[in-house]
Image 1 (spheres, rainbow, N blue to C red):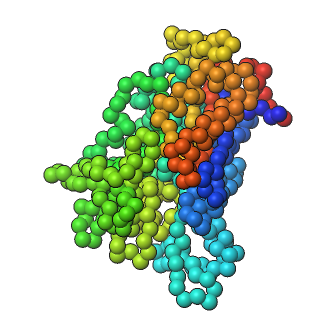
Image 2: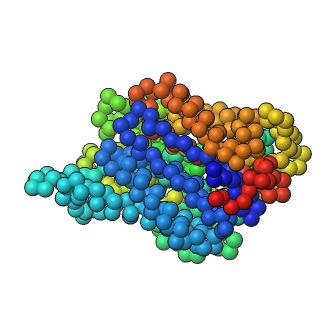
Image 3: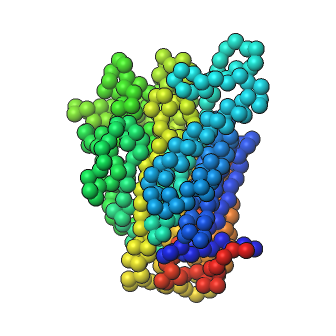
Length: 450
């Protein structure tokens, strides 16, 4: 069996993956693990498609484009990772449009671009055009040398887990938001400055995730693209303000209510006396076990076609993109080697079923919302750093795969208990990381895979 372990310039890793169709008629999730061992690169990615007719096409086309792009641009990923990650999201978005057109044409539809750029379809010989709805979230983590780059659009989240509670939120640096870069032309950054925009610096919004800076055993890696994110309210407003009240965006940002027309759902935001958007918290129902309110963005009642989405960025969703939904990612960076080196100081033994290991180790869990709907973040951390899981990884080059499969079995049980026949597609990629200086995995597990 081929080994799932490999060694970068500074890191060792193991990767496992699994997926479950849930209660749906098809699995619209997709994923890839791109490894170029001779170049010390590893990219893991989750794509969660949506849209009855084209959701699977979106995630499949996005995955195919990204793998091909990384194959052709490995050197760019190594030398200019920020720019390369932005370009791969741009290219995947456009490739998905081509894939939609091809699939619908094969199904007997006429397809054309609306003047605004989204796709329309109708049966040949028909008279009424319909809007093509659908797209995919996309979240990826790229190991380049000793650094991990995180880029995402949508709600497929990534979690960094440590066997000891020593993760400092300040160690994760925000490199930039390419959606803001595209919103307003920017000059070159000041020397030493990160490539990010100051467009929305007034009024100042402090992300909720940055308020607690205490050391912890887990960090959420992916940027928040929830309709409850104040920064996204400001971006929407800057992209396409309401023609009747420019203090608000034209797109509606609402709490979902199944019994209401979307335009009648309660708003997520109110403006305070200083014009700063504040979250109302007047949701109607929770969307997951973390008791997060179900929320969405929706086209206004005046739109030619009605459309809605449960997050603020995606690949595809070309109609909603005319209202400010973006295919461009936020990108963050972590130096994994630095974290592992800090862990080695005063490191305590990590129990396993057959003894203990003192080498520092981290785990990354990247998953679609069909997983995150069923777990609290501490529960995921507890699972992947359980002694049985750590023992599997350090004893067997297929250990991470065993962990991923076991984790998905647990998720299947929870999702069917929580959501019954409405259980969502679910996909997970689990990665374990340690340092070449203090390898926690068996040395004989590293080498070229057959």
